[in-house]
Image: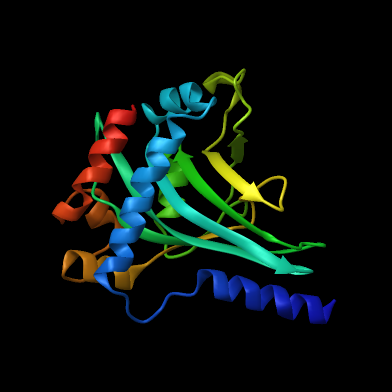
Length: 222
């Protein structure tokens, strides 16, 4: 058990670690991937439900490429952007990383596009913290909107965080419970040209024209 625990801790640390520096192309790739994820979401059978929820979501976190893989001990992680809704418009993006560790007979590799619809103020405040573990926040619930959820409605998907994912590979499903969300402060500083907080970004105190396409695409998706 101690041996497994050490491996789990190592996998989680690797998944949520933040490099000291990053190039502008890294942020650009995440923004392009987020735009692709939004386009793919609109072709999903569950989109009609997600679209209604987008219109009343407090914020959305888009992870274009969440990678999960391993042998006996698996880890998952990916970078993304958090944007807050302002009426029919969306804020500038704050860069985030998402990671977790898990056990099991896990052989193979899974890549998933993940969209977290943040439906409540308490969930948004939790995500804005320096580090937030999904499922560990007091009173915060997370539910999944599957790709086969044609019959689902926003009424029977009550949760502080609602997850949409499009996954392929050796894993049959994807759960975000236990995952850790953390702002990429270094990326945010480089992208906006100065030290900046998540709240400043989400309240449009800073801007970067490179983020315009994904903000426009997300608004159009509503």
